[in-house]
Image (cartoon, rainbow, N blue to C red):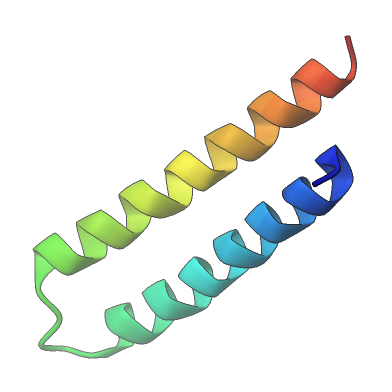
Length: 58
């Protein structure tokens, strides 16, 4: 898998988590733990995307 296709896949997963997080937050009965976990996973993906982009510049 090329770097570009890997980055594209990570970005798709990040966007999907963002949509899922929006849906969960919109529900008044959403557990805080679920929201926290989604935010954590989204941040991990963002960090990985940024790391890969930074490494590709070197």
